[in-house]
Image 1 (cartoon, one colour):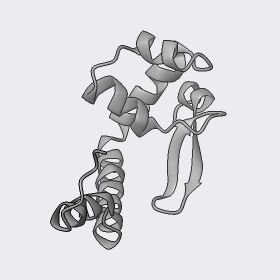
Image 2 (tube, rainbow, N blue to C red):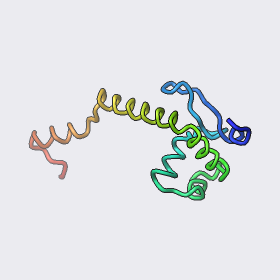
Image 3 (cartoon, helix red, strand yellow):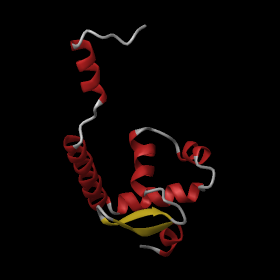
Image 4 (cartoon, rainbow, N blue to C red):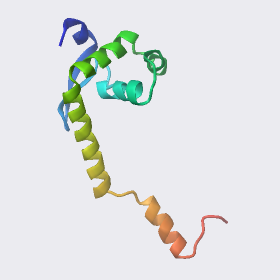
Length: 111
């Protein structure tokens, strides 16, 4: 990492990835900033307004880190999505089944 980036980005241990890139001094991941900025269309200024402890330089450093390591970051995101999907499959939500069961039993939710 370049010296400027290391002022803003640090690596933290991650059970899923080994290491994850975060904004220095926070637990905000580079991939979170990417999601907010690119996938959700938030400007760097909007992100800073939502997280006032961050600086614009942090957001731009996170995006620079992401683009400099795009393949690695995409692999991390894919692993995380796969792990979340597996966890959901192993532990399906109980509310839809409870609603279905209640309807089948003839009970309604209204009084």
